[in-house]
Image (cartoon, rainbow, N blue to C red; front, top):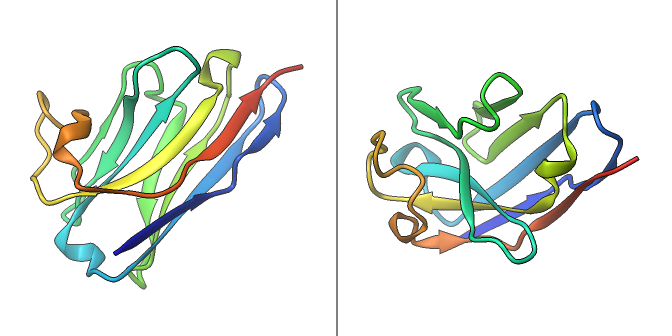
Length: 125
């Protein structure tokens, strides 16, 4: 099982980035995939998650700005990030979960069994 996040970088406030999570070793349709982020000195927080039947969740701080999606080939999960703010600066991770996402639990890291290496996103002028 592998998940590999990529696409991070340095962007100015108001800019956009698209993160990619390449998955292998499992059938994407059978799992929830989530995006998390961790800023220095802060806890890891859930950003968004997606299930195969189209259920998605977003943290309040990113609603309306970020969009999660999956490709039809079942190998990639994306996080489109628009209107980026300095407070979005963090290392972003993708992870998979066998638990169906619910409002109260979708963003609990302990619900995710496998994690990829993160990708750094820095929003700064």
